[in-house]
Amino acid sequence: AEDLAYAEIYALLPADWKLSQEDFENEDNYWPIRQLKTLARFPHLYGTWIGEGHTIANGNPPQPMSDNCNFEGVILLAGYTMSEEFTFIDTGDKVISVLSMVPLYAEEMDYKLKKGRDALMEKFDKYNIGEIIDIHRKNTCKKKFGLF
Image 1: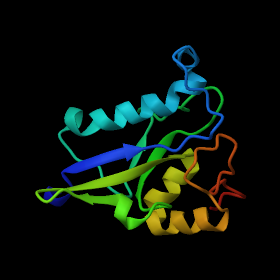
Image 2: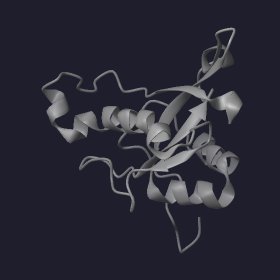
Image 3: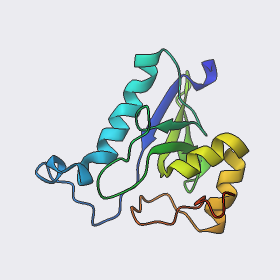
Image 4: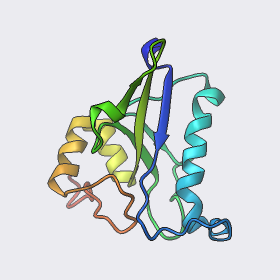
């Protein structure tokens, strides 16, 4: 993880997302910011690192991010829709990974843990899941008849 010691995490919000201080008093508006702060503290609190493809649950046991969505975790993705020039910043003495925070449903987190990152990305491609947070997006791994 020495090569991955530095990371920046971002989230892309829809243009109409409410961003005022007053709006942030409502968790339905604030949860992406709260999640970014949680991710920023994660390596320091747990003496670990975060990197591309990592999934991080919202609590233990995982809980929905807010009342207006059922996301229970996130996956960190490098270069999901941004160019590689944006995804890795070489400062000369260190390389900084720039990772996108993409919210996940519980079933998607389970699927990724069982089948791997690439399998989940195939599902995202199949359902045209983008990087901009969409609280109404399709759950790509919703179980049907007990199968993924």
